[in-house]
Length: 130
Image (cartoon, rainbow, N blue to C red; front, side):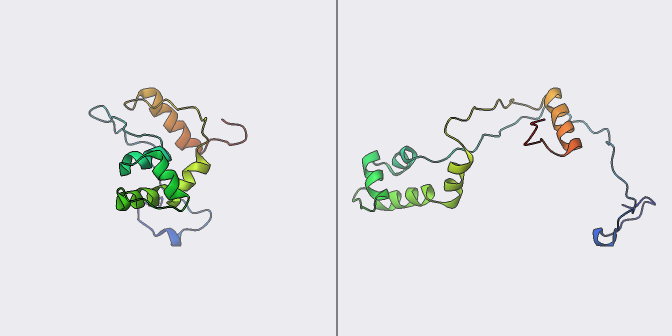
């Protein structure tokens, strides 16, 4: 929205143009907001064995190029998930000894303030860590 209250397309804005921004609409939740987020977890060979209903040695054999007669379809699906790009990427992103973060069960005033500061500043410095 431009400063005169009319809507404009983003591609028609130019450097120095003025737009309206919201400074807060005084909107607050009517009830507590729960948080159900869980950190991403890399699938392990143990997870594959449990999912496919086979032993860890069977999983190791299949990952080494061998076969299995017990639940071959389920093992193939589990191995495909283990080798998926998403799971492989988590290996690089999540160091094995990373400290767990504390995630509250609901949005608290302190968490809301932190998120407001983060949004207001736009980032957390990777260099200065603040």
